[in-house]
Structures are given as structure tokens and as C-alpha cells.
Length: 86
Image (cartoon, rainbow, N blue to C red; front, side, top):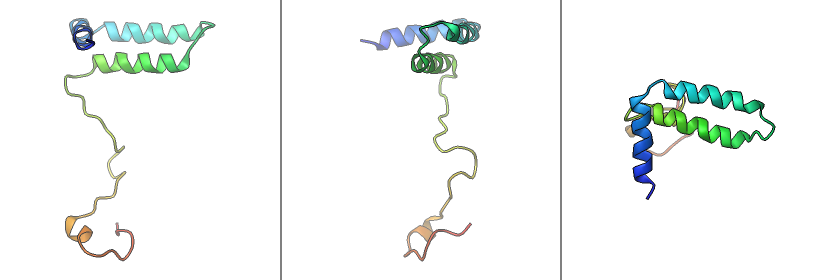
């Protein structure tokens, strides 16, 4: 089971806040190595940032404010005559 390992790693990052910046620095240095794997580095970078993040990180699926058009329910519940007006 992977869950105990994930929990242990999370605790290590919480107990040592300096660990994440050190790991990210070493990861960026290792890009100079001849067997550099960009996808692997992207995954490691994401995991390091995930483990250093707050207990309940907010995932921004939509982008900056105003990225998605808000449509009030009353406008959405009647037949449409085209795209919503801004």
C-alpha cells in the first residue's frame, strides 16, 4: 500500500521546510546532466511542490478571475437566443 509512504513523505516535508527549496535547486542543476529526462523532472518538481504545499491546497481549475463567464440561473433556465451578454 502506497498511502503510508505518502504520509511519511508529507511529514518529512512538513518537519523540514528547507527541504523543498533544496530539492528544487538540485533538480534544476541536474538538467545539465546528459541523461536529462524533462518529463521525469516535471513530475518530480510537481511532487515536491505538492508535498510542500498547505494541508488543503486550492486547485485553480479555471484560471484568473473572469476567465469563465458567470451565467445567472434565471438566464440559463429559459430558452437561449445566443451566447450570454457580458
